[in-house]
Figure 1: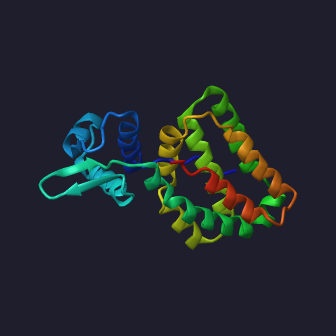
Figure 2: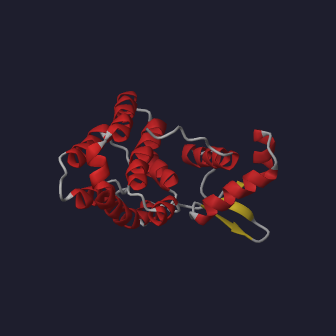
Figure 3: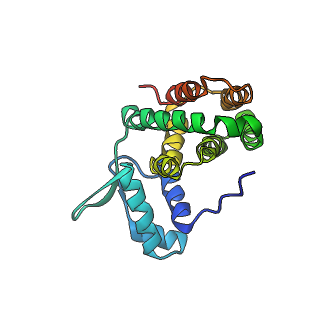
Length: 207
């Protein structure tokens, strides 16, 4: 079983800012003021600055001299760019992890159970959290540190949040989609890599 994730202060602030963007608190082109966020959250400006830099590296926000940090006007096409890269990485991860996960799918099943509850409740935040956790279990099971680091650098949580909450207007059974992947690992499907790649690509936002 994967130990519970303890989010750093920077990660908590990043999620706070991301939620503000997703909910419309900060509109495209609107300035995000570092000092105001620090005062609001009762923290120093240093972790706020770190969180903003991370979001900028993911091209969710942009900064300009004398203009500060502003929200980018993102489109579905912007979000789609990371999915082919992620799909290729997860295909490799699935192939490397196939033997290990065929023997023990408990961690994956735990996330599917949580996804089932999130689907029933229509809880987008929980759908994101457990979808990302499911895929992280597979990448971690591959046992390749370079692969995991590269996958993490894509900002999976951020793009999954935006894809589900902005560009997935129709309800989707996330639990069922992921249960099919668990079943494929259990039966030692020789095409598990291609199956996971296809699954990731199907999650990309539609234009």
